[in-house]
Amino acid sequence: QVQLVQSGAEVKKPGASVMVSCKASGYSFSVYWIHWVRQAPGQGLEWMGWINPNGGGTNYAQKFQGRVTMTRDTSISTTYMELSNLGSDDTAVYYCARGILLAGKGCFDYWGQGALVTVS
Amino acid sequence: DIQMTQSPSSLSASVGDRVTITCRASQSINSYLNWYQQKPGKAPNLLIYAASKLQSGVPSRFSGSGSGTDYTLTISSLQPEDFATYYCQQSYSMPRTFGQGTRVEIK
Figure 1 (cartoon, rainbow over the protein chains, first blue to last red):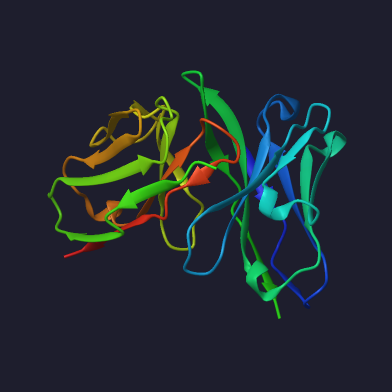
Figure 2: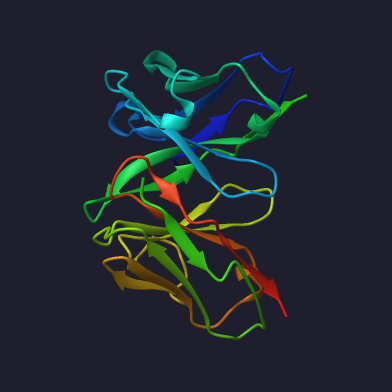
């Protein structure tokens, strides 16, 4: 079955960087883009960007341009999201999600369990 | 960026009630509209894609409709496990954007 398993919770100091991983299994890793979405405590969902595991192409939300880097390691079916120069407002649960076309339109059909990043 | 506005932000309902949540896009998104359910401490779960298509495994009491800029998620008979927060999301263009969420609470 399709699974996305993320790395564990992190506590970081302001100004530091964090890297969250997302290991895929149960499907062909290179076929589907991986998106990253975050959720601050008690808040809604915020899309950060995507990575195409086939070739490594990326697209980032303008808000995170210059601070976020998404990479992948196809040998272990894992994608990474690194966010630098952390501030307190980056405290959030970070999710990876598989992007898929259904009925010709995109959606996120599988999600990781989330990784809490606390900046303090 | 396309802004997604959900209403209401929260609602109280009883088991068995019919519940309707609306989502309005700041421009036409041509049915590139998805609905997700999120329970506390859990990742979102896809309910409806392409505005009206039921994701595999999702109960048939959930349905979606709409076109252009206006979309609706309906729960025909609210069940105890449906108390959660619901988000709409557009996939018409980048950046992908979500509504602010609608919290469905027990009356």
